[in-house]
Amino acid sequence: MAHSIQFIYSPDTRPDLACDRFLEETSCAGNTGEPIRGVKAKMALIEIYKLTKTYGNGKGTVEALRGVNLSIEAGEIFGVIGLSGAGKSTLIRCLNRLETPTTGQVLVDGQDLTCLSDSELRLARREMGMIFQHFNLLSSRTVAGNVAFPMEIAGQPKSVVKPRVEELLELVGLADKAKAYPSQLSGGQKQRVGIARALANNPKVLLCDEATSALDPQTTQSILALIQDVKNRLGLTVVLITHEMKVITEICDRVAVMEDGVVVESGPVIDVFTRPRHPTSRSFVDVVINQTDSAETIGYKPKGTLVRILFIGEAAQEPMISSMIKRFRVESNILQGRIDHIKGTAFGTLLLDLEGEPSDRRQALRYLNSLNLTVEVLANDPDA
Image 1: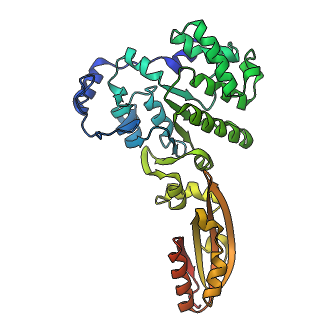
Image 2: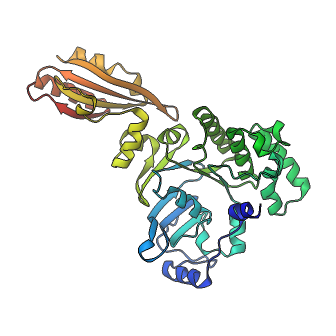
Image 3: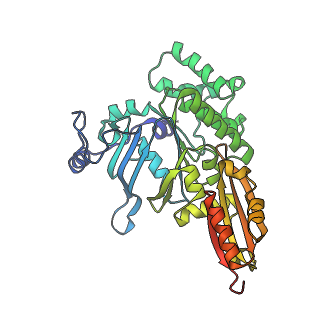
């Protein structure tokens, strides 16, 4: 039990000399109210500035984070996606100082967590709840006892704790499980307890570290819906770490893609999903939509021009292909097609082989581009 308490709630130790050196190198203003170099005057709720984290030394040094910069707005669900070893879990643990950054700044609501004393950090952490991949519940406590635990640590009286526990269990749909123990719960129920526990001290920020990775697809959907619901009801800001693009498209507003300790791409989910600029982003998108990039990958030799069309929102409902065929002397062979949704916005892809005279195909492509679609020419038949 002692280990679990320390893991979840106890502050990291940091030598005073290291802190002094950090303050000197970053011009941290501490509590003086002076501006911090490199930080915008008008800040988002969470600002991450030139964050690094290094483990070990000498030949065994591992750079988990390498100069990460991010801005997370109040009230949004911000996703961070990457493969194993990309640095995403290290990043989220730096946000509440479960890991102490090597250099850089983490500002939450204007307060630089890297400059706080242990007692100040304990208070700051109450503003940030966290849920974990493997739940981290205390097996010797009931469901109600697990939810009550952070409030007990904070010194809340029983008169406050009991009704708050009842309120939270009702919120996460476990009012009838208050006296059950973790061993008696399913994986989805355990994560609901984890969410209730994370909300116990009325945080502003909810950190989710691979919160659905240990769950089956159906349970994943229910947990994501619950996170969205509590975010809307309580006005939370959510930072969500995952390796699954489907999770990102389900509930996130914006996303950062990480690789080798660096953010390689970030922006609104709809933009990153429909127009990925980095190969890592493209690989995540391809998994979700089973997208192919060339005639060779589907074993097809085009008879004309092989085209991939991406369409968003109302364009997904328009009969663009039939309109194109009527306007121009081309024929269209639809090889693949898919319509999906990103937070309620329709998004689709079509893979077409346009046949006809070269001039007619060029006119048809100009027409498609005029409809504000994303049109990519993947291949041409050299004899067509």
